[in-house]
Length: 327
Image (cartoon, rainbow, N blue to C red; front, side, top):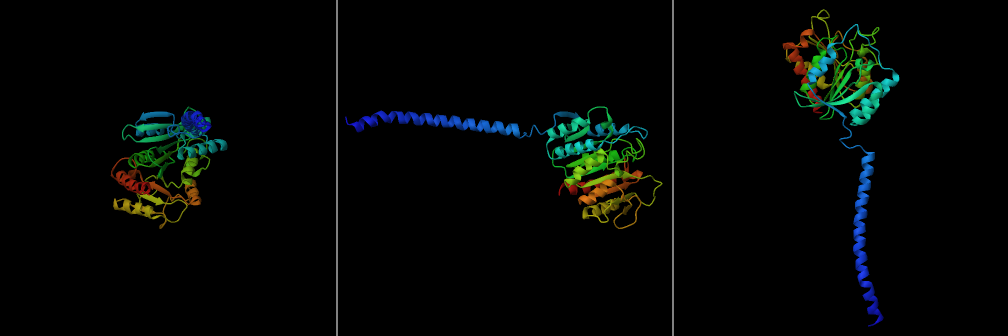
């Protein structure tokens, strides 16, 4: 046998054996690499599950909210959050709006607030609630409810619950009736505390203002609900304006048309001189600076709460919110 044949005989089997081993090693190496990358990704990027609030409750949404506002007292205490607390609250709400509930929880905990994923027993819809976790000052800073089943596309704002009777009930009704919404709710009677400290529609140092600002910065249009006494004017059932802005987008003008078609007497602040136009409202002024859509609505007593006028007003508002929700 020639040396050539000997060489081929000695090298043939080892070559085959090495090739099989190398394939096996390569496969193991590939699996290890994938696992390593997955581990790194898991540790650095929160999963969808991780970005949801830890706390969860099954509740009746209407009862949950109205139980909170029922005990608001004009003689009750109130102190606004300080500058550092407001900054932390704003970052926390911003994180929640951006889909990172765990970061929101981390930021809000030191100021006495938490995030709870609640499911409404009536509708089955889910909401993320920002609310106080204890019994301190933060209980009077208000609450925020965000639709958790879709992107937030509109907000209803209630700066004077109880003081502007039934505006809190109208806010809940709008949140229940139209998907994609947020409800911003003040947590103290407007006359609580010292001076006008709790009149959050005219104060920039409130949690309410900070929550609205985070929504405005993300381009979420909002309607702010107010009520006036019968003695203020007997000529109108509703005063509709755009706060500090002297013009109205088409959908707001359409809201006025819809309300009038339902039989409500409407004063349009952008084309007539109206009482209670909300030009000094600080959320409206901020919206003008942000180029955000802001609607200021004052309703007579019969146009909020129960009754025919209230149903007509709520139906008209639902039409506006549905337009925003579908944009």
